[in-house]
Image (cartoon, protein in one colour):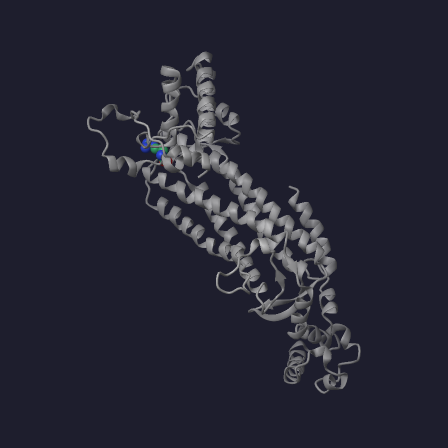
Length: 472
Ligand code: ARG
């Protein structure tokens, strides 16, 4: 919730409910608070007002409102927006939600014409429109932050294209890779996330307005006219579907959950790498915290917290799937429960991406420690096997020869490249003195010089392609 909306939500005014004509008893005070959504859906006030302005223009366009009435409505809504922007608006629980609060304020302000705004519309299509508009705007912000993080990773990859680290499988040293290549692996994860958000934005960007409560309206509304004013690509085809569909919200949270899963895995690596045992990277002081009791501690709180926040987004995904699973068509009040999980998801991914984008611009890389770790881990063992295969040894036999050489290295606490030619030759007479060229870490990574490989040359080419892919 923004500061301005928080401030204004505390004031409660007495107000008459627009729907109370058929009621003879007042709403129970607790039920009133229980069913209200204004404390959280006021966050969509800008979209609600934009939707109402477009709806009023459409009503004028089809001569249901006069030009003068339309102008009064637009002017009134503009004043209300300013009031909300500045935190001076009195939100009322009695008026239930953002839609009725704004509509009632409009009528207070401009009189009877305000009551005409809701012609040919229902809160059911209004809220479905507002959420889509709101999420569309938020997706654009998420995409910006995603790109910022991706750029930071591309820059790191470029700077560290030649930096060697151990690549892991089972968290055991496997083969040497370049740090740049590793960073670009995370870039790929994020690039898939980006395309999923773009894709879900496209499907989301159709307008429910005009479905009214569920069946459409008797007015000769011009839905494409309103849709164009609001920047929608089209209109929802079926009125029942328009008011009841929340697939777009589930898609968004599902994309967010996957994004958080990626950030969580990346966080796990950073936490390990920043430890004294790995010492591969140092996170900038401004992204870490200390311990109140242990003076030596510098804790990687940011990646830890991002890893932790993944849980709440996964929870929101389950909330929304469960929210929808029992609902018959069309609108049901259950749908009001979509907002808090959605808003928290948006806040969580925007915050996580922002802090990650900033943090990754200030990571220092400990080349020596990574090189040393790759060197100590027999990471060129596969290269030795490939060398033997090139001299005609079947791969399985080569695997066995190298296994024995590794055993000698383990026993004598030496890397393969530190064994003598004679020692190596006792395992295979196919080993010649040119073997040492393949046993170096640099030789090992440079040899994986194909599209998608870890060779520095490939990393530099992939960096170029990544920049181009980001441009669209
Ligand atoms: N606050 C409601 C929601 O978020 C708005 C729509 C309510 N419609 C209704 N007929 N009660 O879903």
